[in-house]
Amino acid sequence: MRTIYDSVSPEYIYPLSKVDIARVRKHVPPSIWETIQYIRFGFSSNSSHAGRMLGHGRNYRIRVNFCVKRVEGRLESPLVCRQRQYIENVKRYGGKPDLAKGVIMWDLASAKQYAMYVLLHEIGHVVYAEANLPGSRLRCRTSKEEDWCDAYSARLMQEVG
Image (cartoon, rainbow, N blue to C red; front, side, top):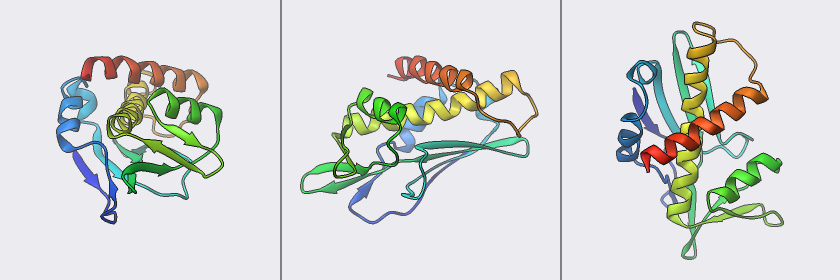
């Protein structure tokens, strides 16, 4: 499993480091970890997803679409969508959305918590797929799966700390 960080200009930072990924690895079953080809951190303002899990052959690829920008002594990220669930999750992990300006204000600890939530949620999709649809990479996600992945992420966030 590789960890990839897309290149960003110097005013941007990724809240999660490879040390954080190593901490996560201790709480994910090896059989799941072995199916993850890579975890890629980047940011695309053209995407309405904070994270994605894609099946690729017998493996999975995870993308975390989140980084923060240093602006006048504070951290902010663009608002990628206005869906209620997205806004609720941002607030739950300490983000302060400014819908009028289209940005979210963060402190580093909150940005790290949110990025960890997104990563663990996407790993949850891998766990769910392997448990419920082994070998099948073509599927539609359901609200049941999303709820399961949210619960998985919340549980692992407690374990990882």
